[in-house]
Image (cartoon, rainbow, N blue to C red; front, side, top):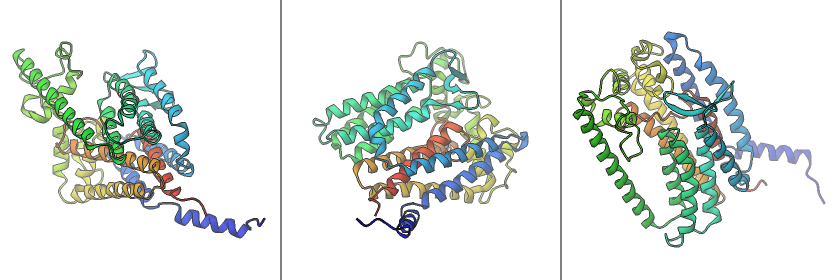
Length: 409
């Protein structure tokens, strides 16, 4: 038996380094991370905030996590998907318990670990991704009739964490899951009848929400509130599971003249001013008046509305650069899905890519007034520990799909 020489090992290492790693996505993610650090600093410049330093720590930890996950054959996650899913459900339950979950602005979404506030909904996204891919791999998918069993399992697997997330309440983390799951079902070549039925259900739900919002608007006006406020009285008598502050966000988008410009509609108005005042090249780094003077609230400028800060200070060209970098990440994710060695790899890459696409589209769309405010953060740019780590882990999975797209030689 001929054993490989040290020269052979060096050759394999060079091949692994040069051909086994996709450098396009990490390069784009690195630039996006630098954008994030720079503009978190800028958003808090006038108050000497130090969240940009914390962001560097989380990005460094995320880079290590990205590297570790990239080195693990993605097929490993198929064998532990069910256990990982069950493990991630536990904190989703614990965060709802008094004394364990930390309540901030009426929502109980974090578990305070002392050095770190952990948001269970972030790991739940990963769990749903792995569980969905696992179920679709282990079960035959064809016509709707043939797929009823797996669809039932999938509805339970996705529905349980979604319900727990909605109970926090955290609508923004729940609404990103269905597009991811549907994209994975589409790649699995499920019957088009299912998607037609799903579209019909979505339109029905949209109609119910529209009707409920109209009823809420009429209710508030009949009680003499010329400018809608978060009174909390309508939600107690409505059978639609929405909070009044969520209805206010919808109304501030559809009927901006019906909300208090100093209250409900403030954030979106100031965001539009920020984006619109940036012009072609912007006002300059740390020179954006909306964030520096506090018109764009400091509690959201460095996270949910970070794109508004970028648009004001670096203008259309800076915004276009950020969009271009995200385009590279998303396009490369689809490319890697096509290169995957098996269906499990394809499902993982597509699921992650669509999840990121939803985050990018909704976040930027809400800052420019195309959709109601949801609070969805911008990957690798918005401030946040749990979110940064989950993004790094998810992109590490995509890198693993690329690295193990064929056997080592």
